[in-house]
Length: 414
Picture 1 (spheres, rainbow, N blue to C red):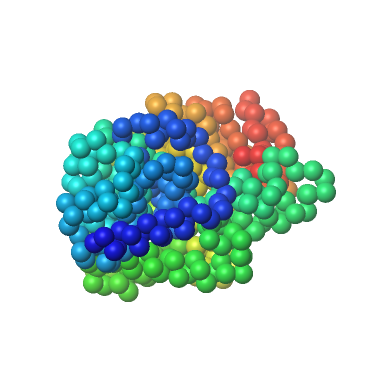
Picture 2: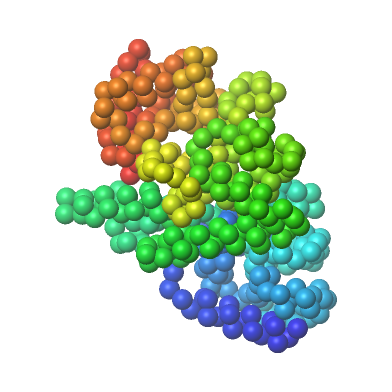
């Protein structure tokens, strides 16, 4: 065990010594670290959770355990591990537990460490940590920091441009970067080597399906699970229902489909957005729209015969709203009016609808412009909301119609 922990210390020191891009977030690191609560960093695999944790702790005396390690898991002995940490990291102030969900009954062990006064930073790539384990054993004992792939701002930072102050000489470079991000997403590992994007994300997607879904849940019919994943990524931004999917894919039962859909949400690959309705029962019955955590997965995995920049932009806006803290269970929905007009995002704050967001890649055609404006105005009337925005690729103007004022903004401003 000591050898394993010494090897992990070498791994930690090597990781800490690398140069990193500082991510943009609203967290006060000192405030977080000074809190006795557990710091839980969640998000998909390979988006920089471990890096964020290491940067938070870089100048501190901290112990490190990486649970993406079979040797550690196979030799696990909680008491022995704690003794070895004292030997390898004398006087440590914090413990970083990386991908801790791989340890059986991890929540009980973490709860015990918390009771013993250990200051913990933990990372995990599974939403179930929040929905079940964290929510039961560790209720009220943790603060969550959610990590996602690079935002458009961070992608520009990486390329040494400021998204919000592009001068005339940088316009062409900025346009190329925005188009690149729209198509290939923001996974940190490939922002510096775009030629590897498709092969890297193709492999990562398959690895998540196998390791974080099939293996974790002992799924026997991996072909069905994989077919569902490919279907969802190919139909991103479209409404789906478990009944239709069961028929379309020839699954044995609707319950199996629902179960697989939940499994695919757990590692943060897919999100499902409900249709807004004041009646909860009606909301549960309506089809949900499916979104993907990064556009790069669409490019690398989707079965598509045509390019759809409109849906890519909608997916990008969705993930940006998730990044800002909107929640698909409570504060973000889509809406369809009585006349079947749709608005992409209904944003709610407490009991009030605060904003309607429509996404349209190109509004230069009068017919397209009329369709989008009429849709958002009709939905605004039914939902009694006057804060309206249409996000485009590069159009900027204000539209006034039927007593409503609509701000049309490019994605760079949004």
